[in-house]
Length: 251
Image (tube, rainbow, N blue to C red):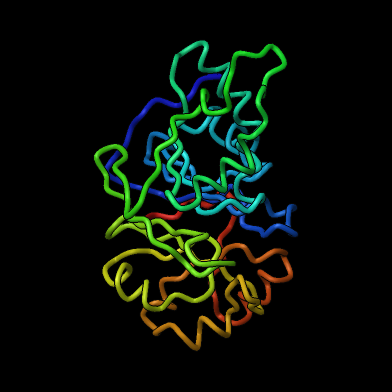
């Protein structure tokens, strides 16, 4: 098993490893992979099941990961990934790039890194298997600039989305954010958006999106984090487009 080599082609795709919420594990933790025709080069979020799903799909570990927020269905996979990455790094010497919005770095530290000896043999820190890159407004990866922006989930500056201009915008978990879409998705960006049939204080509902988003934005939405097959059928029945695990969406 090897970490995939860095590469990027002219044509980009976003493929989902999971489309569910914290209570919809049969659909996998919400997570997507940015890839070109040659393979994957960035994973978005890493729930508990995602390292295994990534390896099954691509035969390798992720080369880089962007974390949207620190709820466990989005970060708990970093623990099993640590072990795979550490022992793999003994072969090729490459840690996994981990891009994390700066405001949530302390939260990630509290949740994942406080154990003093992650290996029984000792002498290893959790961060030794990752190259932590705290980010603010964005970051460079493979000569591409990715914008990072706060969304409305749980608390102020607790969760963030990611955008590659003229390619895609991925909201992460969020309430409706029309002001963000007006600023960052007004070109050709495909929008991948958190949604379920009925919203709650932390997640978007389809009726809310229809009320707050223009027809232009609604036509570009591909919805995930819907929790169950029944929820997907309900959204489809309302005319929405839902993300499908394994489908490669051109972006």
